[in-house]
Length: 377
Image (cartoon, rainbow, N blue to C red; front, top):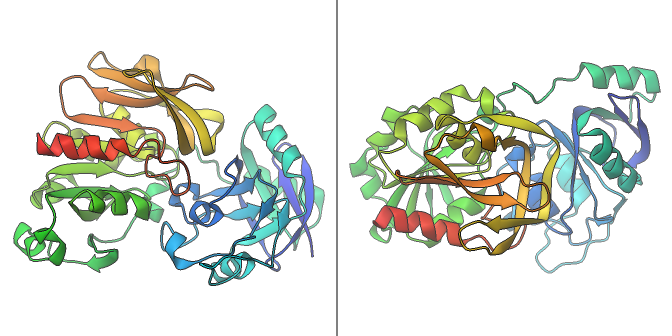
């Protein structure tokens, strides 16, 4: 069935729905990854966005439970050039269209995704509406103009867990009592070297997997948790996850980060990187069209090595705003934006990109080892 995508600047793109009728709104962005569409779909950092895949063939290997990075699809809509209904993969348990319908997500194909990508690169990411129900151009453009912006919006709270839990051998254990004594009684604690308090701003499961593989017991707190509650479980380290929205709008998490820095080793990823930077006195700004994909080159300024990284963010840290106590450790080679920082004296560091991959290259997994080394020091 026919579908339209209308942007706030009046540009219209045509396609057809492969998931049924629907209408949705969000910021229209693009992702350059060639594979990993299910991990992208379940990445909470896409809350409030309509994602366009630049790779032209999507759906050919189906979907499966193991590739989910969260318990839901958080993006507003999904746009592809060509949807492949006849999937082929030994791990697949279903097709992409059915997966999107199950989660109530509108998917559109037969769209000129190259034109969308070029338009966003030139004009910037912008609000959009896509619909099969309303096919009036003027009406859709007005809806796009009235859609909420991501600027000044705290979306992390809407994708965070509602209560604390423990990641126990790949399972979520809801726990009211997170006392050290109760946590010590869990099966994994006998094998774990460290306990990590994780602030869930929209985290991905692979972050938990990689920490667990390195001997960490993962205790996950909602974004609303206060420093006292987090420190009460006696963690060896504190981790701030990725997440959606404007980092400057999550003032409560920034306050929490400010309160725990210096008390325990701290590691932040993506939104967590921005939160750490803000807590240390820096500022952030919105990028023209963001970085989203699995092929972003990043330079480690200490070693000179180049990492190919997975990224998903629309905001960046302003290097000029960082205090003298903070050192820039990584930069993006495409636009020279800040990709990593560390405190010169305290055990705290962060990166803008996604070292947990899923999907993406594994070049940067060493950062999890660095965090473990900090806790062992």
